[in-house]
Length: 278
Image 1 (cartoon, rainbow, N blue to C red):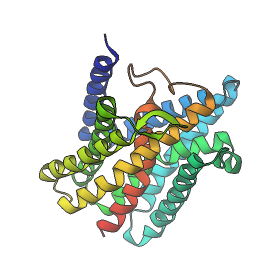
Image 2: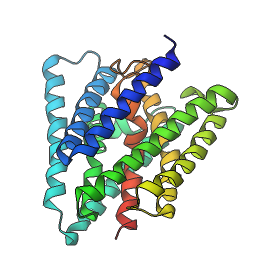
Image 3: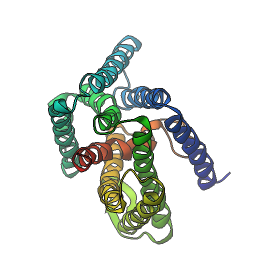
Image 4: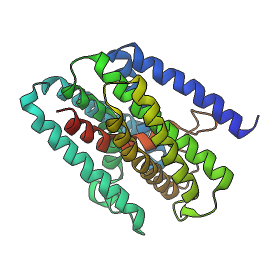
């Protein structure tokens, strides 16, 4: 079976699982995010700390889980609109860390692992960025208002990723960031952005929690942020000397390979929604 067909079948099954878990209820959505966080952190530890003992690995996974549930508790605790200062503070933290990780792409030696430490940075990357979507609940009144926002965002990430890949394979010539990701091209990046913007128009007709302008702005944020998120993970894999973060998803690699774009794209999209939905 060709890699493209394997990638397509795995991707389709992955879409079904994510959409079903998100559509069904808040608890299945929470369980899905926890699973993504736990497996993603396990993959990160496996990449960056190959000689880590089982005991320490279990300790860091437990610590990551604690941070994840602390984020969920914070969502419940700070539901009062008067407590939006908490969300603003968290958004500022996410923005700072995201920008610094992106700036590391342009440095010969990454700065963030030296500031936070390799393992603490991984816990922040997986255990705090992934559940950041819980904070959108502070701006909506029900699950029915929330899940279309998350699904719409996920679809935009997927459209950008899929069509950047396909466009790059078909006509890609000019390298985007050869030192970090030799296969990414400017043509693929532009193709991903174009289809992401087109998808925003389609999504706005079905997910009416935002108007067309709102979805287009989210697409304009998502496409470049998702590309940078992919590059950030590629930088981590290059440092670790591995091709994929794991082998859970045939044709795609690991959970981090599938969610890398989402992790970095989530904070700016969440921050925009906080502003837009006031």
